[in-house]
Length: 185
Image 1 (spheres, rainbow, N blue to C red):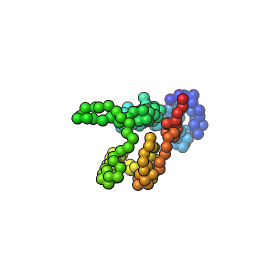
Image 2: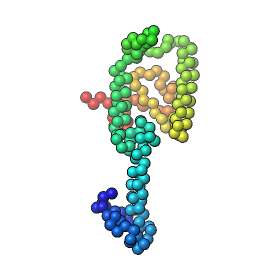
Image 3: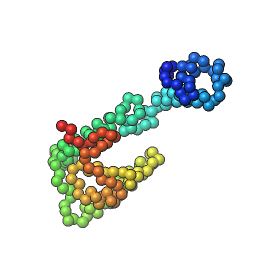
Image 4: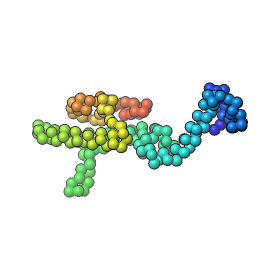
């Protein structure tokens, strides 16, 4: 810790505590030591925790972790968006990749079974995602605070948003304070 940093609310710099140490501590009321003691304890905890952070914090968390940057998340989001807008859909024919094609629509219109299967699948998938997130982190997904971002043409998006009780956003937008999907060229 730097000795010449600004004075704390108690009027003492860290250099004072480093120079005088415990010899003079009895002369001061404990409340005057809160700032310096807090900084020392905080630094010790940070040094001890930083060696374990890679094992505790998940890979997608990029903020406030040594060696990672929050901008990595923005770059990954932009790359995913660019890839989605450039590429088509891969197809396997007899287990072999047969290339990409741009899909213009989904299942056959007018058939009652595909929408029903979709709803059943999405309900199960949604519950699995919620349970997995809640089970691992102890947190629950709050869909009323969540937002969907539409990439390309998505039919019935408002109905889906109403069912999930979330908002629909469109591109361009801001993600982590930076533009996402904006044509900056």
